[in-house]
Figure 1: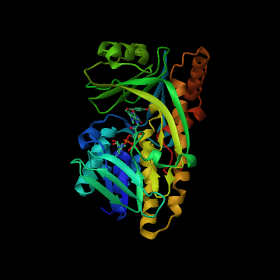
Figure 2: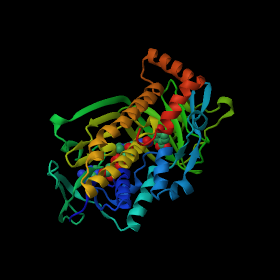
Figure 3: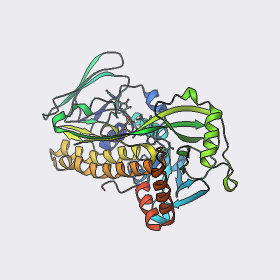
Figure 4: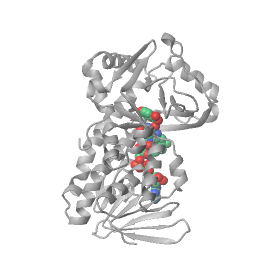
Length: 391
Ligand code: RFL
Ligand code: PHB
């Protein structure tokens, strides 16, 4: 096959990139190891920044968010006996939307199928070739096991943290930075109306807890747990009891309503950046280039911001053989990546119990400042609600 851009990975980065390129008249072929159903069912992020929503709307993909998204003005930050609301609209002039990654993925798949774009699901053996030349290509076996080859002007590595694109960059020309955190999140999805109108981020001596949601009838909640935690050790009753304690059930009359748990998983937390995000004709986007711990709700939004920059860069490269934007892509994207890396690390270390009592006092001091100083609150709001795409 010959196309303009070979895209590896059909997650949000890959499918959104294919959509944005198509709007610019650029063809692509997407290659994905998992089945369409598997990708659609993965429960991951839940918050879209305002710039992400603006981009989706401008790309003709806003109908789902507009119909099914829930616009939130801010979040609650709390610690025992204290709950404070931060209003992002007042503080930073922007809001966020609760819209699950599963919903966005469904919108992207629907748009891809309506346009008849080429997406190969259930592939194996993806390999990248000749990235240093003007005619790179990708090989793989399709779902029937038939060998395939895609020749393209550029390759977009949108294959997440574990795909092959990241390691296709020569090690001696690549820098990486990593931080592994000494705790994980135990996440549940529950068929119960949220007990809060907006997300609650809770500091607690037993560990961090968070109350998020997916809809008026589905709640998403998280607990800080030690690395290596087995969900078998966390029956539903234990989870709800821990959530009630950490989220302050009974505090000022607030109650947490438990409900049937429909999904339970443990998520390790890691910060990771690889630079540059480009080698020759290979361009990395989304989790393929960087990972953040989920506390700042940045992972999905960073993937969207990357491809918003990459699509016009590839458009100019493919159509006009003009490499100016392509050459600038990595530096431009990494400015925002590092801002989000810092914010995600900061939110994470402010809210999770490390076991060190000195850390705990610093965290409480920071929380008191962020919730009582307009300058402190505005800094959090500006980062959480999100910076402009080209920041
Ligand atoms: P994705 O969504 O991981 O998609 C990459 C796709 O590439 C495919 N792939 C390959 N395809 C072809 N050939 C190969 N050899 C391939 N190897 C892999 C994969 O099957 C996959 O479909 O990356 P993308 O598009 O960059 O999107 C990024 C977001 O998905 C990610 O940042 C967020 O979901 C991160 N994240 C969360 N973010 C939040 O803000 N809040 C959350 O609660 C949250 N939960 C999560 C998460 C990420 C998780 N991962 C990656 C393990 C929970 C989990 C479990
Ligand atoms: C979620 O709803 O899954 C979610 C929301 C905010 C976060 C992380 C996860 O910071």
